[in-house]
Image (cartoon, rainbow, N blue to C red; front, side, top):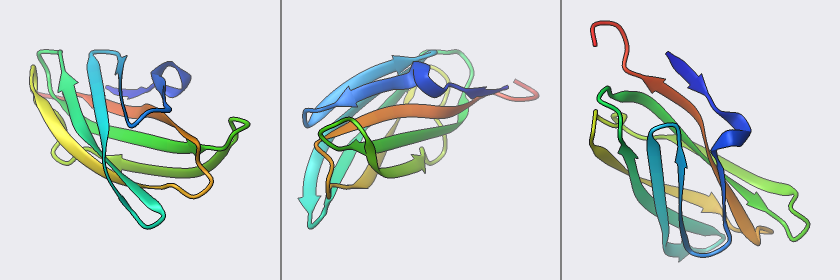
Length: 115
């Protein structure tokens, strides 16, 4: 079953770390380093379901001072997130023009056939 979560899966990261929960996934992130015009956010995705989350896509959107999206970067959590477990991620996001970030999980593919 493919879950498309849109607005329900949003948290604002105005600080250098944060967390959010959507469905049975919890996402935590922290700024690891700044490289030129990019910020490297790393974190962990926790799966509380007894089935794997095979496809988990994270989206970081950079917002300007008025809340308008000025940058966008997404990535799939490599290998998904096994049942009742966690996986790590790192994502290099553009910093230019962004005063805050909106974090969402637009896609989750729970389990599958034979589960």
